[in-house]
Image (cartoon, rainbow, N blue to C red; front, side, top):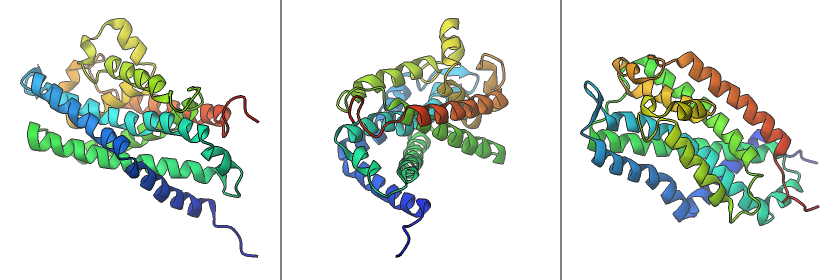
Length: 268
């Protein structure tokens, strides 16, 4: 008898399947890519001429925050909404009953998230450069920071999205549960407003979650070193950014392993 394909081989096929399903849902895919663009156009048009520091426009600041938000959109928000729908319609139960290694399912989700993020951030940067004069990172160190921040952000938010997918009671109600959380994190993490201008309690609240640190790391990539003066600590604190994101990767893994379910709550 021939052996089954390996976990990695099945996982790579799941990636292709997940991408097909993602892009076939035109409304979801279009909104996933269009929403950050819409926000960039709105905030860029309203606040584009304002400087947060000498020679540093709000638009440049905002793009860094929206790239960090793109991680949250494509990983946490996407999975925390899509997985409950798959659980409710029986897709997860059927997959759990097949010989497919269960890790292959998660490989498919992670691969889809990665591709969607690359596409989204590429479009966002292109729009920012073409219409708002956004400066791209100019040093190898900045691009290195962009890579590790993106990876740690994607891993942590993907695992948290998988774990949080058990919270919505129904698939149809998942977006109503997830979207407000994402919006609150954006408002408190220095995405829509300069972080050091937020109330102290809000800064402390945001510091408990990965988006604040991810946005801060992205600002170090897309803003000049002089912009570090607008940070609460007066510097980018990249070591702390990496540490907090790595801790959230561990927390997300534990929560995903402990709480993820293949079947709806209360079912056999």
